[in-house]
Length: 217
Image (cartoon, rainbow, N blue to C red; front, side, top):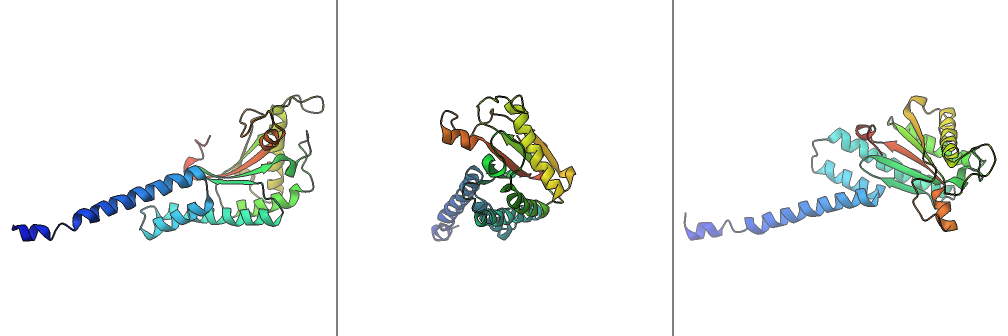
């Protein structure tokens, strides 16, 4: 093979470098999406995977559907005047975080009037999927003083149960649910400030990806 013929193959070097950079970029975006938890990014990545001919078409299409449902749910919550909810998409779940005051009065497990339209909107979202649903109750670290419950453990579990019970009444199959009460032991903010304690008093509603449902933390 002559030197002239060798030169015709030189274009492959920058081409290979470009392909490598695109793969790195894609993987970086993929990692960022799961770290940042953006349903918009999840939707974009799922569409890209389908366009690139992913071998897991069924799984990718299901995740695309979940991302689009999550985006729609976020819009519904905005219409209800809830701008401080959390919505996170990871490889294991789609998680909606609702501040406890939206659903309950202080120290109570009984759902308030404001909770009903919120949970109705979430129930419609859950009904469009068959995936398992995990309801988690959290409190701040202020000890229970009197009343029906002896500890934040009991209160957090009772609040999670109230949410499950309402979803079942709205027609979501009971077999899809599990619930947990964590009391104050999984804070997302500093309990030494009023704002931090307010953030820690929350209900988390997770639609679990089925292949991860048994191992989700």
